[in-house]
Image 1 (spheres, rainbow, N blue to C red):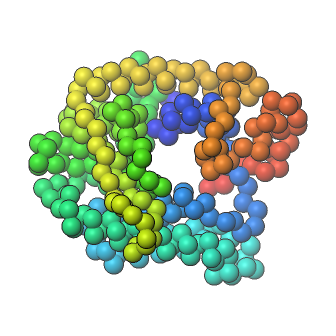
Image 2: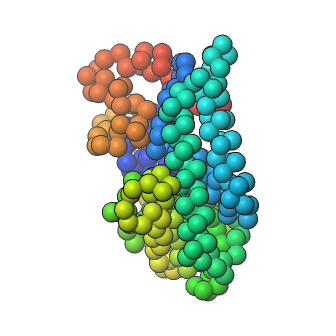
Length: 297
């Protein structure tokens, strides 16, 4: 039985070459000495940890403690040299991640309280793992949903994804693939069609900072059974393409690169990528600088 993670669908669409190295080869960078945090990614993960506590009914104090615990955990994991005290590893950078994440979780808590956004909302699942067979294929799609619940005001279940963002200029399209996939997963898991799915977006700004405009935004999309049946057809087509691509050689033109501004933070292989087109010894570079994800865990 083949397994396709929700994020794998997205990565394959984003860049077939990055997908092939990330999921096909299952490679991650070797940890060589203390590592700087990736601000947007680590800040988002730390914020998620705090929001998870809030969604589970925890207090703001408990949520902030969860953020601090996550940062310390990550700082320790990225300090493979036992002779270097954890407190001395990338301290300014990790302090920035923690400072922003703490403020964002506090802003999120205040937003929920001030707006009454979750009034009448019954939480049914937080960081909810799901796995659904893909019709007609020997494969399953799987992933995790940030927040699933029943909304009394909307008269049905909703699926929400929490995101940290730089701004609100790009709300989700009505055909947002991630949100539709989450709604499809809950439909096929529970038998109930969600009435909506949305992104809860928190701007990456400091608590009490000078940033103007709203700092939290909820951007939902409409969901119904017809939409989910059409989306299932799309999932089948994209799953077939992924399963076929798993047998391609790296030099295959069908594993083409898609270069854009996101490569700087979204791809671990940006330095190796051009070497493949230049027929350099990119395999040796991979061998020296990357390892199997299973070996790194």
